[in-house]
Image (cartoon, rainbow, N blue to C red):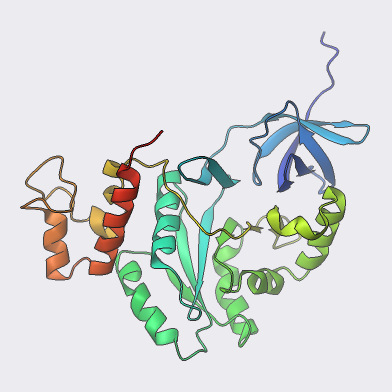
Length: 301
């Protein structure tokens, strides 16, 4: 019989550097660190761990359902694991980057994570222009939920709550889109949780560099995961020839090209380019595809 202690199951609810916070079956949270030097643990991971004198040690990451990450030329950065869905938060103002929105949706598609878009600040005059920019995404089947988190919080809560209930949702969005407002509206105790996590991690002012999971209900069935903001969203994990199939509007035109290895950029008899000319695919989306294709085609070291 082995003398090794029996391991407990737990959920990683926060990460900061090499430290993580593990939540046990009863909801107790323990500061832990991974066994070994390198940590690949992310929020949402189910882990096997054991208590130690000063907290806990994670011994093993259980198999993941999915993992959403971004990868640039030099490194990968994981957001979270075992997600039910991704909420990409944009706003009527300041203007959002369509390239970043596309990148997030492509990464979600590659990871097998369903995604939808939240359009915030619809009380502003710029809302109609933002809706026009989102029209191609609606047309290809991406759900867009509209709200005004600050101006009409009760209405926003009513629209979002059913879409988030019972699901583990990662929220992505650049600064200025209202991510903190959304989390504070739906999780009133979020600020207190951040304080507790900051204290446990001894992170002080740097808690914004951590990723945190917030439960939406007492039964711990639905949660929001808040990840730090980022400037770039690399997609180096995706082959250039795979890209079109991960963009639903382009994917619908595949199979109608003269050449089997068509890049949908300049070849004659291209079904995708024909669809662009007919207006079935927006010129902006095709331009973004071209920029991403070029980026993914550059030499990888």
